Image (cartoon, rainbow, N blue to C red; front, side, top):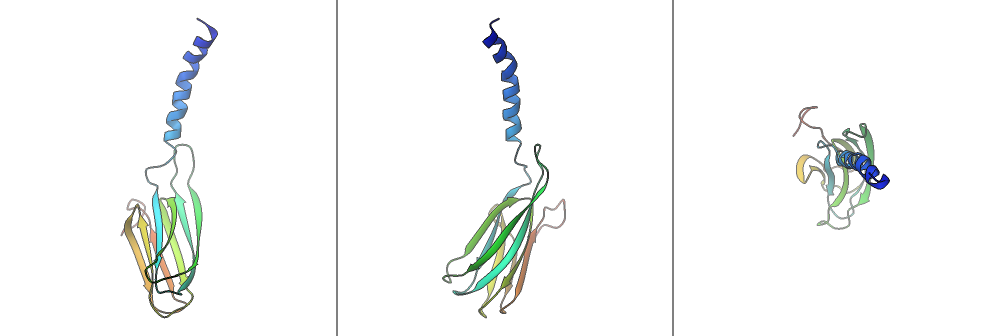
Length: 137
């Protein structure tokens, strides 16, 4: 058997194994998490989210921070912030305007939590964790 044939015979299974591991990198528990903020033009807000990314075959659980800051430009335009994870908790503070500001949390496009405030300096909190870890809306 030639040297190249021998190497192909030995290295091909290892390469296929490694390709299989790469496919296991994203845990099925992780999802696309979207924070949607809607409100009147001129509404300002700031906040922070922490998403926990589920462990996979090749990585451990890790936390991902998401800073939320902005100003609503028009009444019809929502601001979207997106990350990936298994769980997420967000705390948002409205900084101005006495009309309602709404925070909606979506998991893979499905609404899982929502909060709203009318008052300036009002706080809103949204979160999600899977049913097997806690409560699921």
